[in-house]
Image (cartoon, rainbow, N blue to C red):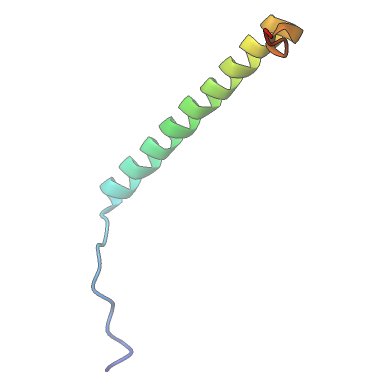
Length: 54
């Protein structure tokens, strides 16, 4: 086996790499917004979040 041969696999074009990066950034931003939303709701509800009916 020749070590100089490249392994068979998927090689992405520059356009595909750019698209993947933009999609990853969009997912990260959406996740960040969701975290901030959950935090804001928790702060608004205050200690009522911890009170459970018995």
